[in-house]
Length: 93
Image 1: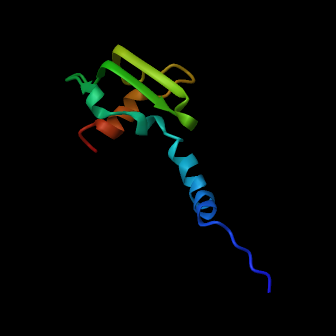
Image 2: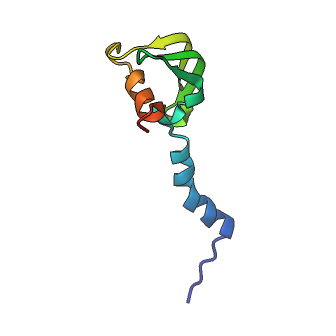
Image 3: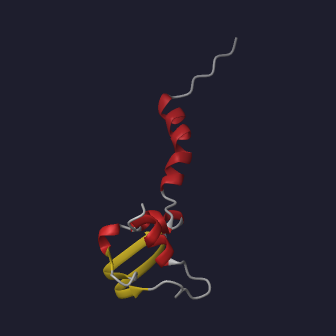
């Protein structure tokens, strides 16, 4: 009978590698820290200074400095920050 011995560290590394890769893939919604945004009385959001790192390996970055985020003010190809903020940080969460 042939016995195959695999070092325990190698088995552990192989078993956890997919989880490590997934942990580095951060959605834009997950990158939002609600304390960095203030909801205004008119329903807009204000970011004094927010830097969001997201995507695979957190290689995408969005910087919002002195930015007011309004409903339906999304340009083609850009994420709907107003909807994301309402979903994650709004009063209905």
